[in-house]
Amino acid sequence: MIMPRGSGHLLLPAQPLFITASILVALALNLVPLGRIAWLPDLLALVLAFWNVHQPRRVGVGAAFVCGLIMDVHHGAVLGQHALAYTLLSYGAIAMHRRLLWFGAIEQAVHVLPLFVMMHAVAAGVRLLLGGMWPGWALAFAPLIEAALWPIATAILLAPQRRPPDPDANRPI
Image 1 (cartoon, rainbow, N blue to C red):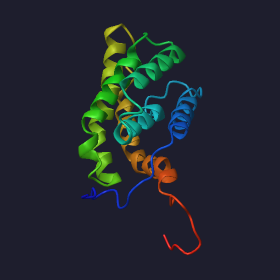
Image 2: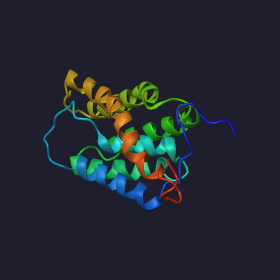
Image 3: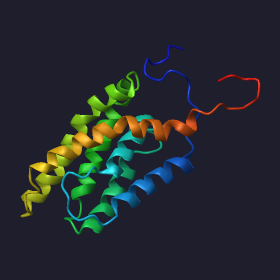
Image 4: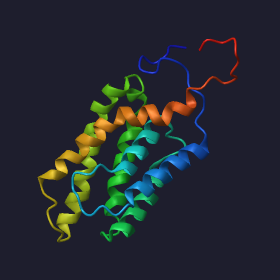
């Protein structure tokens, strides 16, 4: 089998419990009341996009929709604003997941940047269409920060899959 250039080695299967726990931790971090700071990265969107790229059969558009509804209820936003944005983000990540896996983490960050820009633009567009306030130009920094966090998320979320399947004292790797 030809290995994708960015992976380096074969990974163990992702544990469903770890995937669920990482999404719940990202959701909990998003629920922390920090006020309405427009440039804060959406960690839930980052984790959802990551798992959509790496495990599209386990984390799909339905999970993104449910997480979006939870974020809508938490923010008191129009029901469906975050759900639409997360769903479009997930669809885009799943559509390009095979291509993305051939790149390293930094190149992947460049490729997912337009998805994060689109997600924030859709959420802001829905908010503006329904009479909300303009969040300001600081909103443009959130997708840049999310793309910059992509390599860190890759290192953290793939770490449990990089361990040897049967560790032993004589194996150097």
